[in-house]
Length: 271
Image 1 (cartoon, rainbow, N blue to C red):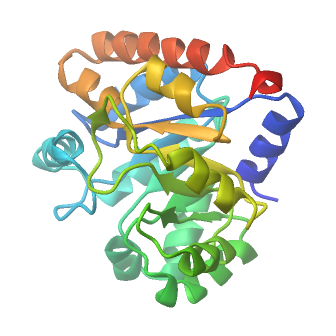
Image 2: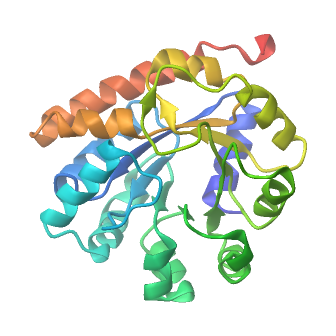
């Protein structure tokens, strides 16, 4: 079992939902990322996604695109993310996963990327642009290494294809709440709950919802149907608004604590 499997088994026993912040590696620099990771863990996050900056991001809205560009402008390299993991992962009370383009994995080499990421302390990878038709090789490598391969299901994904994606994934499924790009939203699709409920009957994997979660109120609405909630743009925006690493850590940690309280306020018995 991977560290992510262990996490969700523990959360299930505790009747708790996972909170997963997203931060961009190297925004504004890798030292700031390390500091913010510590704050996120202390504020109650269960797992953190570390975005690997890419010049041609997939499905990312303007806030995250801008963070990728800032990191690249400051000289970010993939090795920086691996170094971050080696230096921080073991000391954090939460697993880390990478959010990484398949183009990067392919360029490095599938086996080599998984080996390097796992050696650096990462528990898995979210690969938003991996087609399920091309996922078998990477899926097999990840399963052999107990390294989770997390794939995305969208509102427009045909149901037969959703099941196929679930079967080639491990760790958890990333359910995209809205069609389009990442970003904060005040309203979510009315059929979201039904769609996630249907998918839950097709797979034993935990289902975590991302895209569009703007704050505690949205998180509380989604907590009953999800096994976990992923929050990206709202966190990255707070980092962008605070050029000092200490200030960014404080702003993000405060927001994560608010999300944690909102999620925990929803009693599983009442859902």
